[in-house]
Each structure stands twice: as structure tokens, then as C-alpha cells.
Length: 332
Ligand SMILES: NC(=O)C1=CN([C@@H]2O[C@H](COP(=O)(O)OP(=O)(O)OC[C@H]3O[C@@H](n4cnc5c(N)ncnc54)[C@H](OP(=O)(O)O)[C@@H]3O)[C@@H](O)[C@H]2O)C=CC1
Ligand SMILES: CC(C)(CO)C(=O)C(=O)O
Image 1 (cartoon, rainbow, N blue to C red):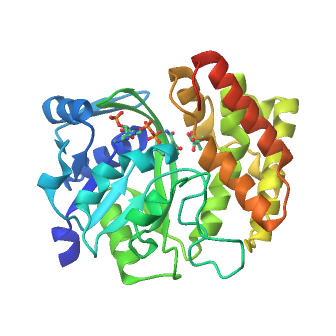
Image 2: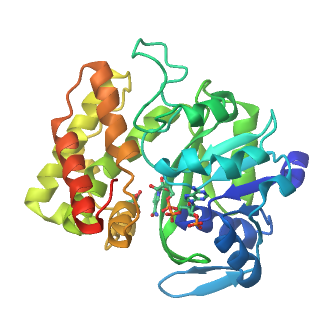
């Protein structure tokens, strides 16, 4: 309880997900420090952070800075970058870190730390598709990281305005041990901040559970413009999504994940995802890079190491990357 009151907490990257989490924590009175690039930080500091839903909009004042070194060492740093922004975004994260700081990466896909701590011989621990130069692993020892799986639906129509579709669930777990006191502390702190945080004793299984949907829907949505319900409702796209899920399950099984989901059940649509554009479709429409490395490339990379082919994942990712280049004219 004492730790809860005195915890120094920063949220780096207040995009759609960081914004939803920051807004709820601010609403609960926790006032985390938001660290962002200068334009976003200035707007947040002057105009506050607005969360809008289908029926409401509320603006809260927030603490925001573009200068993490002025903030000093934090107890907990939540990071809301897309996977490919982590290497360049480290500059805003590292000044906040001391030896005891816990880093909570709120991201989709296979995280850079995935192979650290696994006994099986799948080659070295570096995942080229998500940490090409090893910069993230070098800056953030896995001992300081808590794994995190994000169940939130949101987009960001303006840098200080978040459109929220609902859900604010974070599944959090230790990468190297099943549980710990710090995991319980972080979960309790986030719950006190209004976040539906829950601990997982097997965060890698939780990563795969969520990834099945992202791998199946996000690249297909970027290619077709379809919302998730439209993909599931179209027999041909549903079949593609199901086959991608099957490839993911095969890779996960080869890596020792025991969860064998019924894919027809996995393809049932939760009401919260009706009409939802995936984050990758939002990126395709806005000309922002696609998060293909973490959501498709890393599955393929792990598959290669474990001897499991992923031809459909490779094909759909190649098509989505090519479609982005055709539309936006640069490398992705
Ligand atoms: N959106 C969604 O519904 C969901 C997203 N996710 C996952 O959550 C993660 C975050 O996604 P989301 O919130 O949508 O992403 P957004 O694109 O909305 O936000 C990304 C944030 O990162 C910041 N950023 C990017 N590059 C840098 C950099 N080099 N230095 C500093 N800041 C940087 C941006 O800053 P700036 O303000 O300056 O632009 C922005 O605040 C992703 O892995 C995504 O897949 C998971 C579930 C649902
Ligand atoms: C589950 C889903 C589709 C929710 O928005 C998501 O994770 C994403 O958009 O990347």
C-alpha cells in the first residue's frame, strides 16, 4: 500500500493505448507523467488529454514533458510505442531508468524479450524481426521487464484526443519467473488506477493467445480495408484468418506453448470488436509504417528456428508490405 502511494510512474508514448491508460490513471487521481515528443507533450500539457467514446468526451489535465531527464528515475515506466518504434524511441525511455525500474511494454506481437529465459535451443536470443540491431535488449535487461498483453480498442484522431472503443485490460507477467512481489505491486497499482490489470503466470501463452487474432486480422485488414467483423463474416477471408491462426498455433506448439485453442471458437466475434478497424488498418490508412515485424515477421522467424513453415503468414505480410509501398511509396 505504501509503495502504491509513492510509486513514481511514467507513460512514454501517449498514442492510442498509452492515452487510454494515462487517461484512466489520471481519472483515478494517479497523475502519471506522460513523456512524449515535443509537439505531443506541449499539446497535452496545455490542452489536457481527451477520451471520447460513442456517447461521451471528457478532458483531463495531465502532467506531460518532452524531457525525460528532468523527470529522473521512475519506479514504473509504461511504454506505448508500436514495435518498430522501440529502437528510435529508446531515447525517451532510458533516462527514466534506474536499476530497479520496471518497464511495461504495452504492445502487440512477439516482444523482443521472448526468447530470453527459454531453455530450448532455438538459436541466440535476438529476434531480428523486432530488435534488428539488438538495441532494445541492450538497453533494457529482461530482468527489468514485465511482459504485457493489451486488450484495448482505440485510435488517436488528434495527438491529445483518444477515441476509445472500450476495454482497458492488461494481462501482465514475469518473463523469467512465474510470479513475483513486484508483479503483484504493479497489477495492484494499475487496478487502483482503474485499469483491468491481471497477472499471468505464463505470459508467453498470453502473448500467443492475443497474437492469434492480430496475426490473422491485422495484415488482412490492412490489405482489404475490412473491419474485424467483416473479415470474420466473409467466408474467404475467414478461411485465410483461420489458416493463419493454425500456422501460429503450430509455431507456438513447437516452442512449448500448451494452449491449443479451438479456432472456430477463436473466430467468434466479441461484441467489442464489431466495426473495429485494427491498428494496422489505421496505420495503412494514415501512411504510418505497418507493425508487420512483430505481428508476422517474428512468428515466421520463430517458425524458421523451430522448423515450422509459415507460408501463409509470409505471403500475407509480403502482400501487405507491398500494398503499403504501392500506396505510400516508401520502404516499410
Ligand atoms: N490501437 C489499438 O486499438 C491497439 C493497439 N495495440 C498495440 O499497442 C501498441 C501501441 O499502439 P497504438 O497506441 O495504437 O500506437 P499509436 O500509433 O497510436 O501511438 C504510438 C505512440 O508512439 C509514439 N512514438 C512513435 N515513435 C516514436 C519515437 N521514435 N519517439 C518517441 N515517441 C514515438 C507516438 O508519439 P507522437 O505522439 O509523437 O506521435 C505515439 O504517441 C502497438 O503495439 C499496437 O499494436 C494493442 C491493442 C489495440
Ligand atoms: C484486437 C485489436 C484488433 C483491437 O483493436 C488489436 O489489437 C489491434 O487493433 O491491433
